[in-house]
Amino acid sequence: MRIRILGRQDPLLFTGLAFALLVIFQRSIQQVLDAAGAVEQTYGVALRPALLILLVMFVFHQYAKRREMKAEAAAAASEVMQARARAEELEQLMVFGQALSRALTTDGLREAVWRHLPALAGGSDTWVVLRHEYGWERMTDIGCAKWLAGTIEQAADHVAESALPEQQQPEGIEHEDHVCFAMLVGDRVAGVLGLPLPSSGPTVRHTVAAAAALLAIAVRNAQLFADVRDHSVKDSLTGCYNRGFALEFLDGELARSRRSGNPVSVVLVSVENYKRINDRHGHLCGDNVLGAVGQRLRQVLRRSDIRCRYGGDEFLLVLPDTGESGAARVAEWVRGEIEQIAAGPTGERLSVTISAGTATIQKEDQQAADIIERADKALYQAKAHGRNCVRPGAARTPALETITLAPGPMTTH
Image 1 (tube, rainbow, N blue to C red):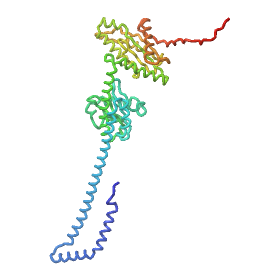
Image 2 (tube, rainbow, N blue to C red; image 1 turned 180 degrees about the horizontal axis):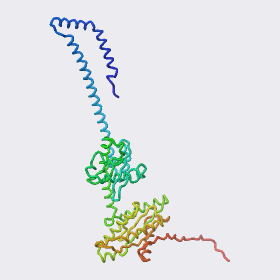
Image 3 (spheres, helix red, strand yellow; image 1 turned 120 degrees about the vertical axis):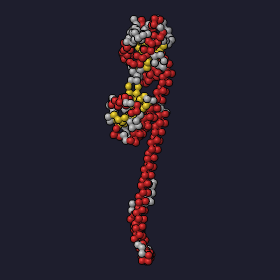
Image 4 (cartoon, helix red, strand yellow; image 1 turned 90 degrees about the vertical axis):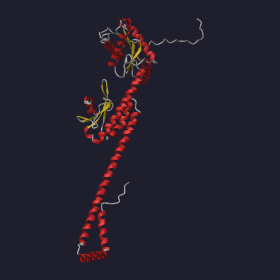
């Protein structure tokens, strides 16, 4: 709470006080003026006009000095307010940076952005997109409730295509109704942060630019963490998950399916004549074939589907929320895509085909091995029926119940 020493009506009070002092000391002042008059007559000088001029100048000097002090006080108050606002801004950025440092996944980054970024942007709506090999991924407004699909992505494309000096501008890059800030990792755009142009003042732009720099570092850290995690659970040759991860994931999907009632299916794929490819073209060509198959599986399947190298030339596909007919369609689609692979030693097209067996969860399935066993039997049937085809897994045959009759009294006829 600030206490005002001088109020707006104080000059009137001082004026009244001055007149009161003149009345009180009227006789003394008159004596001074008489003495000044005597000096003027004795020495022939204009003392009283000089005293009047000095008095007026003294009053104006005090008035100007007071105005100068008020201006200095206002400037100091403004500097204090700016310093306080800057301190609050730095505190918000520090809290945002701490939240980002604890986030090692995209979901964690999304939560940190959702909690802290609107306050840094002065309450205005902000959006963030991350760059991937297949395009832009929205970190905010995933359902396109505020911005239509493709709107902010076009702005992000404009930023990504801009020259590096423009991307490094702290004022951002204006595109249509947005001002965008590149999230730079080195000289590469890892993402774009944007906000509506009408709500982007200089102070807000400065703060959001700093937030974009912090977010770029966090995105890079999350990507590195994901790479380390993927290397531990992925096969380096095919880029698919390893067997242990797939079995663990499938056990989790089976448990979720039993709770929710949603189906889950698997497809077991085997590359045909893989040994013949190795013998005829060499193991390097065989590795190229497996790598090409893994790459094609990553391209054609959903991001929610799990692709794993089950062993040797076999791949296991886990399809959440997919029934029996859907699994058959996916397997047939994959079979047709694999036929298009050209992975020969010099780029010529090899005859790469697959056989596949599918299986869908049943009530009797308790663990991953149960559903994989049926898919394996279906794969064996596909190989036995001419290869390069898909066979669905048969339903589990219930075990025959053994009926035990309780002993009773024997009857005679």
